[in-house]
Amino acid sequence: MSTLDQRLSALAAELAALPDVLVAFSGGVDSGVVLAAAVRALGADRVVAATAVSPSLPAAERDAAVAFAASLSVRHELPRTDELSREGYRANAGDRCAFCKAELVDVLTPLAARLGIADVVTGTNADDLRAGFRPGIRAAAERGAWAPLARAGMTKDDVRAAARRWGLPLADKPAAACLASRIAYGVPVSAEGLARVEQAEAALRLAMDGAGLAVRDLRVRDLGGDAARVEVDAGLVGALAGRDDLLAAVAGFRRVEVDPRGFRSGSMNELLPDPVRYR
Image 1 (cartoon, rainbow, N blue to C red):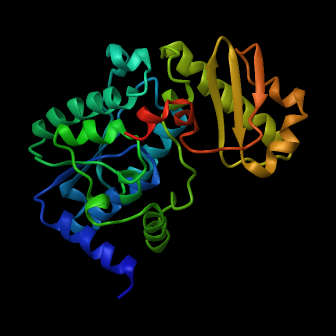
Image 2 (image 1 turned 90 degrees about the horizontal axis):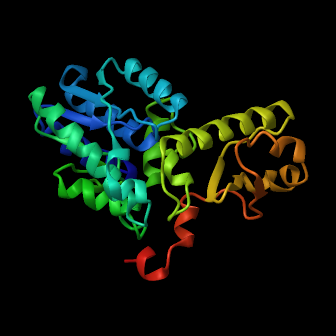
Image 3 (image 1 turned 135 degrees about the vertical axis):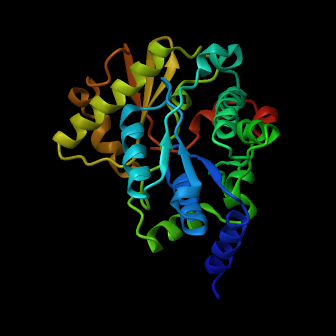
């Protein structure tokens, strides 16, 4: 038996022991694999997916989440969360994600209770637990949500391998963190700021596709002071850097630069002081 087989067996055992489960489904591959694994272990009628809807969730991600949940024939709830009501979230210090996950679990736990479900699970994987500064993971765990992938020892590579094995359409989906992750720490988060980033990314992606520059990973990072930094696949940096016509699609910012290092997941954490980043 391969390591992946062993970990998938452990994942199935974790889920099969439950009477039913509510999966916090962001629309990404991690929580998507948890959702699919739960259906395989329990049956669709004992699984509920819940995707939190707020200004931090791009509309395209919400639509894709709805389609995926429907493909598994599970009940799909779309509760509204209000991260922006939390001062710590709006302030956008290094612990912003803790306030976001606290809001999420504080909404999903009573939803699960109304449905008669005791367990709320997330898509946190084993790599996430080793990734250093992740205040959101701690906040979710403190409120009773738990992570089947992490318990089973499944890494990000394991998750994608499982998705391919099961023929899930999100197997090769790029990482898609919430829109607030695009805003530099210390720059206050607002609904208007989140919408500006979402619109800028959508417009730039469309412009690049139209110019024959098919891009996989793209981020518009709000650096504050109407300055933005664009991250794209490393192989496209050179082609984009000299195209002022394409960068003009990044509306709402007076100064736009292209990061020469290309896309890096969690690059905003690089701006945190080391004692905060690695605690």
